[in-house]
Image 1 (cartoon, rainbow, N blue to C red):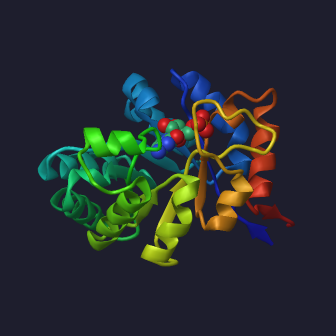
Image 2: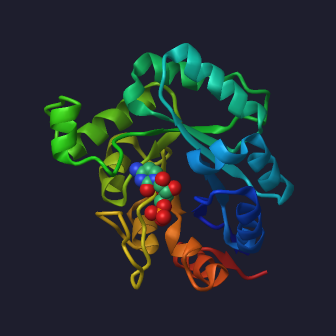
Image 3: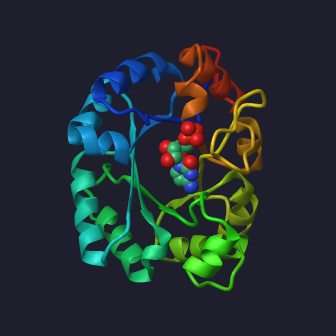
Length: 239
Ligand code: C5P
């Protein structure tokens, strides 16, 4: 019996050569690779095609945030690349979220990508959201509010910090996808992430997938690091 990996590796590297080398070695332990703005800005759609050539699914993490028409157009372009998952900012507003959901829903049968929204960036503090964004809500209240808006607009789920998993599960139910960055193995460095959990704790709290960058990329043995994290998140391969 095989239980699939829940690990999405963040390919936060500057060039395709490095990304391809890494992805090829890590592939047996991955649910998908995440291509973000660093790699996509440098290499463009060929980065996505290179991962597909390796048989890997792609989470295109470009966090679209613009007027509804522009976001819908970006989603149609991403859809044409055949990505598995993509995302927008929930704070783009209800009309933008609906336009995003509709652009995804117009995909040919069997090719519909998953679409998630980022609620509150984990780099933002309570002071940031109260002073810069002018909300009176606390961070957890704002996260819950935006997760509900995301679900109401018809998106598949959210990207959320490990500490927000419980409240989102409660608010949005078991079928709403939760993808969680900011995880760190128990013996790992925290880097610039603040409120971390181990990958196993995040999955136990209800995360569907964990996004892992530096704990794999900066490890002395990235393949062994990916294997350990995948096993910790419940991957089994007893065939
Ligand atoms: O290296 P590390 O494991 O911290 O990488 C986490 C990845 O998840 C990075 O690609 C980062 O951009 C992304 N991410 C995050 N926090 C968010 C959203 C995305 O760390 N709120």
